[in-house]
Amino acid sequence: MHLTTVIFDMDGLLIDSEPLWREAAQETFAGYGIHLSEEQYKITTGLRSREFVRWWLLQYKVAETEFKAAEDKLVRTVIEKVKTRGDVMPGVKYIFDFFRQQNFKVGLASSSNMELINVVVDKMGIRDHLHAITSAENLFYGKPHPQVYLNCAEELNSSPVECVCFEDSFNGMIAGLAARMQCVVVPEHAQYKQERWGAASLKLSSLQNFNQLHLDLLER
Image (cartoon, rainbow, N blue to C red):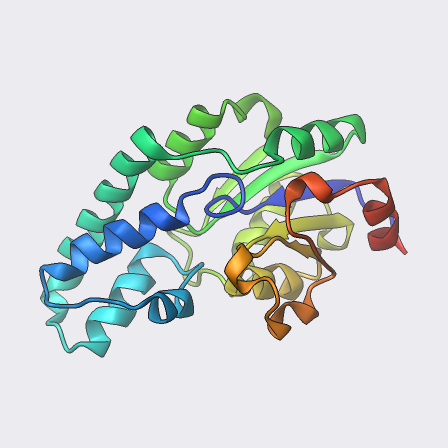
C-alpha cells in the first residue's frame, strides 16, 4: 500500500485544548449542579460538543430545553480559552515539515465546529499547509463514525487506503480505522499504557517521534 495523504485530528493532537475543554465543561455544567470526574470526562473525549453536552445532561436528568444553551456556552467558553491560552503540542512543526518533504497531501478532520477550527488553524499558522479541512459539526454522525475522515479524503481526492491519520482519542482512533486508514495514535501521557490503543496501526508518545521508519512500516 502506497500512502500519499495524511489527515490530522485537532484537539489534543495539534493544540493542547483538552484541558481547556475540561475547564469549559466544568464551568458550563456547574450551573446545573454537575461536576465531572477526570474518568467521567475521558469517556466522552472526541465526541462533538452537541453529543458531549447531551450525553451528560441526560445522565443527570437535565431538561432537553437546556441542551442548546449549554452547548453554546461550552463552545463560546472554549473558543475564548483557546484564543488566550491554547498551546501548540510538541512536534507539530516537525510533523508538518516531515510530510511536506514527502509531498503528501495534508488534511484536518475535527469533531469541533468550524469557528473553533478556524481559530486554531490561524493561531497555529498552518492554514497554508492544509489542503482540506473538514468538520463533523453538521454531519449526521460524528466520531467514532468515520464520515468526517471519509469526507476529508474525498476533498483531497485520495482513497481512504492511501491515507494515514493521526489521533489522540479512542473515539477518533475508531473513526480513522473504520475509514480504512492507517491510524497513528498519540495518547495523552496518563492514558498511554492503556491496552485499548492496541487496535491502532502505531502508537507514539509524541508527534516528534514519527520518522521514515514508521512511515515505511505503515506502508507494508
